[in-house]
Amino acid sequence: MADDEPSEEAGAKPELHDALQRLVMTSGASLALAIGNTGVSSSYTPLGHDEGCVLRVAASLTIAPRARRSFATSREPSFGRAAASPRFLGDPTCGSVQRRGVRGTRALACARFRALTARQEAEGPIDVPTDLEAVRQEPYPLPARCARLPGCASCAWLTPFAPRSFEWCTCDMSDEATAEEVYALLTNNYVEDDDAMFRFDYSKPFLAWALQPPGFTQDWHLGVRAKPTGKLVAFITGVPARVRVRTSSLPMAEINFLCVHKKLRSKRLAPVLIKEVTRRVNLHGVWQAAYTAGVVLPKPIAVCRYWHRSLNPKKLIEVGFSRLASNMTMMRTIKFYKLDIKEMSPGVRVMSTQDVPAVTALLRGYLGRYAYAPDLDEADVVHWLLPREGVVYSYVVQASNGAITDFFSFYSLPSTVINNPQHKVLRAAYCYYYVPGSLSVSTLLKDALTCAQAAGFDVFNALDVMENHSERMRELRFGIGDGHLQFYVYNWRVNQALQPSEVGLVLL
Ligand code: MYA
View 1 (cartoon, rainbow, N blue to C red):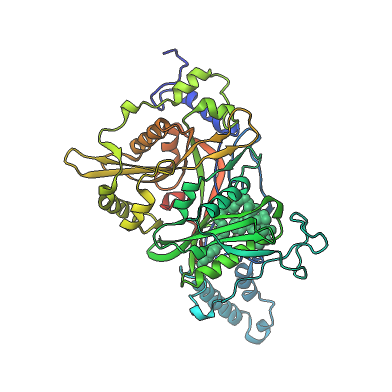
View 2 (view 1 turned 180 degrees about the horizontal axis):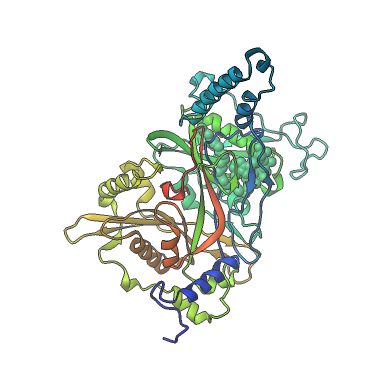
């Protein structure tokens, strides 16, 4: 091996590794397919923002050369009521000062402030569950299109005076024609990077899997159709899940696939979709929701980052996801990222149905250590983790005595490569759940990378959640992305934002 050749041993040539990582990431190679979801207590007000909100929209799919894309609208934080109230209470110039004297007023202000703070600090529901009968029974009205330009889908005028030209629909994902419509809407209009180089391309089998877990409700797969064509123009989904926030295990909806057709953007359809899905979820007696987004909304419970590990560096360079480092040849780069299937840990095999009880027990034990994690049972494990070709890949490690000691998994989420003459699709594997036992997390991740490379994926993406800390990721030749993914819990107050290492939830 020549002196400057990449070492197969991670860390043996740190300067070379760093150069490669710089190549891959600072040049904009970070496919931070971060669909966004957000942070620290979370009550999202779908119609009309809270004054104190910070809105910073970050790219979902962050990638390459012209980095630092800011899909970003940035609104500086202003003081919301919570911040303003204590200031008012403590204001010695307020009327009560004259009546009570400064000291008395301060004492009263302090007492009120303490009470207020105590209320604010209690973790739990922001709005305590309402009586089901108090939930609005009829759907929210949809805005109408411009009356002056009949048939115009793209003008900015939406008026309540025009005849209604959109209608709600419920999408039956087991119906082939509907599944095709949803796929078409998402594949053409869903999350892109700021440079419009890549767009998520969730496959139909993936959508069928993601949207029909045990106990799913078709009513939560909500679409908007244009009248009179019937074309699907907007979509949002919820699926039921039991999720634990610290010690509270709650029935929640996991909200995903919020999408408005490109020609109907900025007409405030999204807030109506969110309100309507909230109503439908509430009608089932569910008052909390988990979601992630690249945008910053009020308020993230955790802010996480993506890391990217090249598996097919040549293609990543060709599509503009990565660049060749100045001191590297293509051959050396390929060698640097090559993983040898013969080096897989002994005992690793594809998960099968008979492993479900053992994998469930392992996951329940391991995820129990995180502050924000799913509360999985065997039916969930059957659905979410039994392997499905092209969708989810799961492996166990079996000891010589037959015991299942470890588990790892990843899912497949390709992206359309926009306007590239050579490549149409980027095949990305995303780190899903794992449980270390006899092997370390690093070894499990290396095995996962090897399986993903052998299965033909181009890149392996992982959030810095669970034990995916930066040191480990660098060791495994990941490069950090420039996208952030915010995690949110709807209608649940959390005192302090969680560290990524406290998050054990992976949303698709
Ligand atoms: S994250 C994936 C989001 N989808 C995409 O990024 C796909 C590409 N983009 C689009 O399709 C549109 O740009 C979308 C906005 C649909 C995103 N989450 O209609 P508008 C707010 C929440 O004029 P459009 C995912 O799926 C924005 O702050 N809100 O804008 C999880 C503004 O509000 P305000 C968002 O560009 C979704 C308002 O929308 C998001 O035409 C979780 C503008 O509306 C976002 N990602 O459409 C949803 N992006 O004016 C919350 C923008 O107030 C769930 N906005 O600032 C809450 C829990 C609900 C269930 C509760 C049950 C208990």
